[in-house]
Length: 326
Image (cartoon, rainbow, N blue to C red; front, side, top):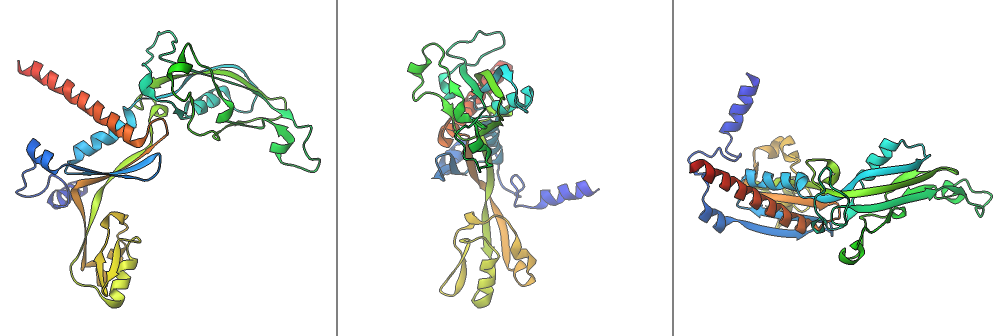
């Protein structure tokens, strides 16, 4: 009964897509072409915010899922351990190595299928060989392990790329990890690591280590309606209920300056004197995407790859439909 009631409330609420009474929600290419718009706002070298305007939820969610699980990257798949005398077990260390993001363009490589031989076009090879020793030049009064020992902490910069075949000539800039200071393991005198690593091309639906994004999410554009003018202390109180920059006071009156900055806290609804004078809505066809890359490809390149993959899926689907209708 409770589930039916919740579903019924959702169906009657016109703020959600597909529930507008008398609204034609059928697909229309001309309408889509006329209304669709992209606004791109770079946040950093690895993060971008994309406003996708004029699309429905299925399209937005398709891009999100493709970014998470179907855009390929390179990741360590096989670890050949010759020696590991650290406190970290072999399988834990191998799993940790697999999650290290590699800064190389995966579009240069081919997928390596089961049974395929290692070639320069389907595999990257790395070597990790290091031994921890006492530092004879360490100060006598120090207790810092990084001063007492050499190679006490193993970072990604310790792992060396070993080109296979002619890779050094056709991989621009070489191969490295996206960050040089990711801690891999901790050693003490006498402990050592000796292993060879093979990285291959894969997708996130096979294993999360192949996912090219640290995060790929979207939210609907907030819409804030002020049902009456707010002045004086009421304007100040209204402003304090929202994130900085959402509400500003101009000529003594509160105005919605940038609804996009609203985090959806709904703090305003906690105040009886404000709750029924402000309406919090969402713009149903305006999605704000946030894409943060792990570093192999830029966020815009990732979005381009996601669009290509969606186009290929549509071609396959259309081909299957043609077979069914003939």
